[in-house]
Image (cartoon, rainbow, N blue to C red):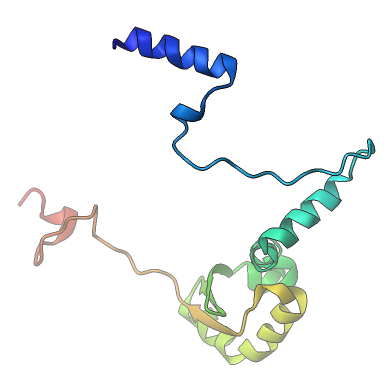
Length: 154
């Protein structure tokens, strides 16, 4: 059977609705929609979707990232960036080690503010890290003992 014949058979099967022999996965089961003729509010549909798929904590975490300046204040937000939430630990990168030290001292008050503002984010503790040190590694492969890009023309 040539590619052309296969394409013609495929087209005919889709045209007639007999695509079962080409289907590789199980058919998708769709819930029956109540059809009362009235349109539904999009906010109700989105709320139902969030509830059905259990996305509340993910939405709360996203809200924490997007509203970070209003939660912690503009002064702190200017020097911090929330990086990740893993197992209830919010990791925050600061602009300097001095900021990391100062925020570690007031972490209990900051944690209470975060838990009040983004209650569904499940933040149980805070970790503050300083800025990243410069890294001379370029790419995924490196040679031990080499000096990085400075060792190129040696």
